[in-house]
Amino acid sequence: MSDQNTPKMSQSGAVELKSGSITLPILKVLSPNLDEVTAQLEDKLGKAPEFFRNAPIIIDLGDLEESEKDRVDFTALLKVIHELSLAPVGMRGGSQDQQAAALREKLAVLAEVRSESPQPAKPAPKRPLPPPRPMTALTKIIDQPVRSGQRIYAPGGDLIVMAQVSPGAEIMADGNIHVYGPLKGRALAGVQGNLDARIYCTDLQAQLIAIGGHYRTSEDEDVALRGRLVQVYLKDDSLTVDPL
Image (tube, rainbow, N blue to C red; front, side, top):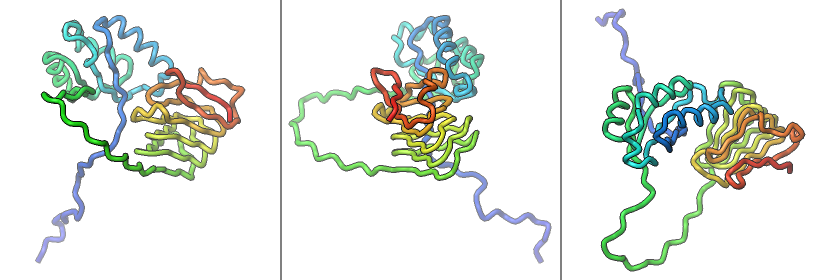
């Protein structure tokens, strides 16, 4: 006879590991001068303090020369980043000592991303390139208001929101973003680096808009455009808002 007080085994697992698509901001350190880095970082974060508050980031030292990397006090840099309410979760491109310091702080050490590919020893005969495969457009449609605290992401395509995006809400897409209602939260298009992405909305009141990592805040918006159909696009490395 079984003991009724014996706990039953759950039919489902207690944990699950899955791959996912999460976009993290990358803090590229371009100077070994910590005072200079701190001043410029404070200026950038001051334009959108709530957006970056407690945001997880990757610290990238890969653009520094080898001699400059040794001049970066990684522990002091981490202290500055924490004081500015950022949450570093990993680093890449540093020296062995800097990577060891990152591991002591429980940060992930990521492999460097290199754009150049090794050249073959001998030139290979050229072959005709196959025609490109047509990409399947992936579009996510949201037909309810996006409430404060919600975060919606459309990987690999466009995002269409048929209602209001409330203050404190965040919508993101690898492609374009369309909002058929007041856009009062944050909208980030082209989050995987697509600089041709655009944002369309019927009433732009956004706390922050961004395309391919280029952003601007509500303080920069023209109040004369409120309540009008507008498009946001990237021109000469800056965001442009035009009525439609």
